[in-house]
Image 1 (cartoon, rainbow, N blue to C red):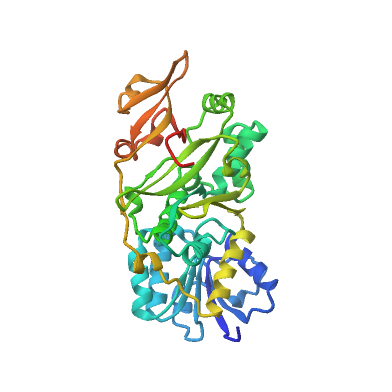
Image 2 (tube, one colour):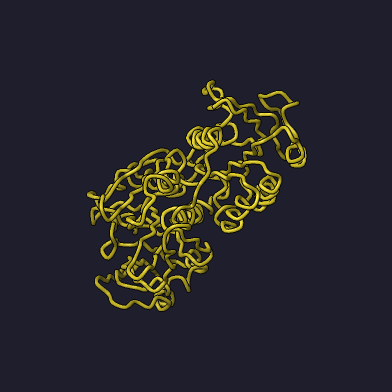
Length: 398
């Protein structure tokens, strides 16, 4: 713990400020923020001399031995993280999109330059899920990881189901509190959860999956009809990511809204909290719960990585190195609730079977079995159609 960490911090938004605050509450850690790189000059609570405006000011500073990357733009984050690793600097990042899209290269860079990249804050905020998957569940007994991975969407759904607020009002409240961005697409359409799920899949099963090939669909199309349907059936709707080990060394993964009943762990995960259920062959189900959005919860996860680096910790990627890699399989089927208005939209969904059907004056719905591959073919069009989809959970593990 006597190792002095001199930090170059990129970004001073909600999470950057949160990290600065939690660092002040951790005096035992031998850490100094040497410089903070931001885009624009403006009035801030910290001394002006602490800030810089060119990434090179941090990257070329030989005194800085740890780069903490907390900017929102994945395309801007990638060259910063890559160059830092190439220069022999350890890196902590919270950028799930950047990591998920460049996973294999970032792992190789760590090996090539004998450095460590830690990113606990990139998945599930304050929950130490990556470290647990890497260290505690470091064997081949794991069967599935399922959970609420996006605090912003969960906050919105809580306001809808527990406080009877309309979607737009709940979204605005999430934005005002800093849980959702001005453009909420990343959160409410399941992209944030998708990138987190890709990261969790690598640490759960040793398999790197291209995010573009994974089904994700969010809650932006939810209507009062869907909400009333769920309530009448005794469900809540949650945005859920799942990766599951199948037979014959195969994996299934997707992010979809889900109809969740009272006997499931995630039913009572509310507001900006995340909840992750880990299921194993020998230990059945274990549940992790914590805040998944906000500056201080995410900042605490960044702090955890900084503390780990003070002890020279690095991910070993044990599942990739010591166990048989599992292949991502798109051929499985799931049961979904599909609410639609136009028959032309319904015709695009090739159900294998129908278990429930309703036709009404404004909306119709069908519940039935459909292949993940069929849904993947529609992936880029789903959120632009006048529909809503939710997994029923009846044919799944959770």
